[in-house]
Amino acid sequence: MAAKVPLAVRKELRDSWETTIPGHESKLTEILGTPWKIDIDAQAIYRVGGHDSPGYMLNKYLEATTDNLKDFVNKFGEDGKQELNHVATAHTITMDETEDPGISYCGCDIHEGKLRILFAKTYFATNIYQATYPDTLQAALNKAGNSSASLNFNVRSGIKSDWDPKIEDLKKRLQKIIGVDELTITPNFEANFSALDGKPGLDRDWDKALGSRTLTYFEGLADNLVQAGFDKDDMLQEGLQEAFEKKEIKFEVVSKLSKGTYNETLPEDGVLVIRTNPENYNVNTHQVGYGLVDLL
Image 1 (cartoon, one colour):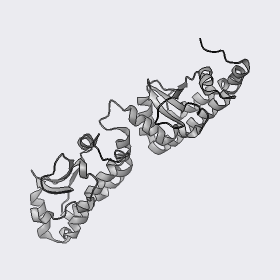
Image 2 (cartoon, helix red, strand yellow; image 1 turned 135 degrees about the vertical axis):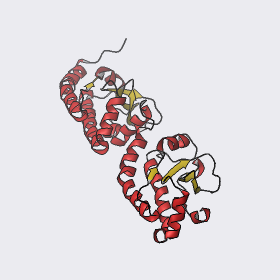
Image 3 (cartoon, helix red, strand yellow; image 1 turned 120 degrees about the horizontal axis):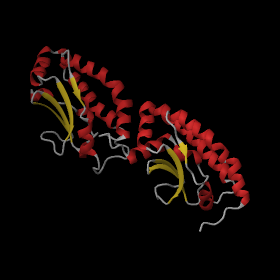
């Protein structure tokens, strides 16, 4: 049987916490666009947290959470809001102590469809704002996963911020360099994500950067085509156009390269294909397309 919580603490919880819950729920609902609720066992938190003013501190946790959720939505927009509502299916905030060695003071996760605020043992009320920082929320969503999406939240967010705003201008640049009116750019995100996921040697946030790093491969190609003179030489343009009659440039991560060391660029079945392998992903992207004229 759980130890009885002292009367003074129960009163403090009532006055400093329970009275604030409706206001917090209203703010959460406004920020996230759908009804959210709070389901925190305040007396249980007192028993493990041991703070003299648990109600006051719980109120501070939720104030921090609403502020951080505003920043999260400002950073990730409707996509971020929809992702959180989709993954945290219960639309509920809860709290618990954690023994996760990866959490020094506090953090959060998605547990049983709820957004769960976590604090390490003896660290209740420490670094409150850090528990639900936008980056911490992003990591929690990414770890929880979205069964309806082939790419995780990190990848999708990175594509939207780093690839989508820039690819149209780069496409126009490549069209001008090659001398064509139409061009298809195929980044192959889903297949490349699968080829890279879980491979050793990748940096911690590689998935966040998949959009930007894919872009650098196409930028490297454009730069080397200019260096080789394609933008000013009709003969070179015609030779390249003949080699990739489908007017498509594709990027692939494969297990083994056939010609290059770090990457290779070659026409194949009417498509100009840029390839790398997991071991050399994001290495020497400035070499993409170097020596292509010798293959035409």
